[in-house]
Length: 188
Image (tube, rainbow, N blue to C red; front, side, top):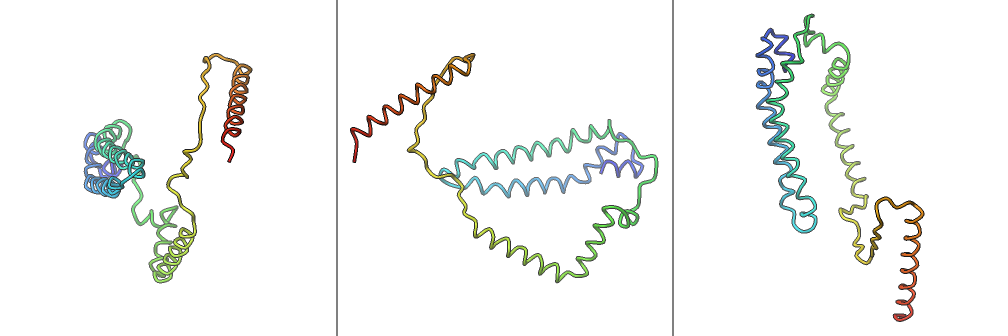
């Protein structure tokens, strides 16, 4: 938008602020839409809710920060970095016939011309994706492994590998002895 404002002949001091202002509504609605889309995650109960609670909060903070940056810092950078182009920019008609934009326009025309085939193909793709997704095994959290136990072994920071290995072997031996004793007294 800043480059287009510069190409339209706006002053360098005006174009960086005018460009983003033209898009301010679209940026605001896109930001609000994304924030609202993630808000239902705050309603999830239980451990899943606790786990996922930070996701919408972080996304909201990131989007609000992005909105502030896009309307303040980016225009400031645009003022210092962007310059009007020396040559005349290509018209929309020229862009639609060459390069990536030309290929994209041709593909869009083809898709519009054969809209029923594209719609049926898209629906088939969606159905195949749904069938494949239904066959997947899903698990949001791993199995409960509360029966596992952990042993913390603390050594000084500057200990060499040999000392660490010896400490690990001592711990392993103690665990084996305790497991053997437990098995002897609690045989079923």
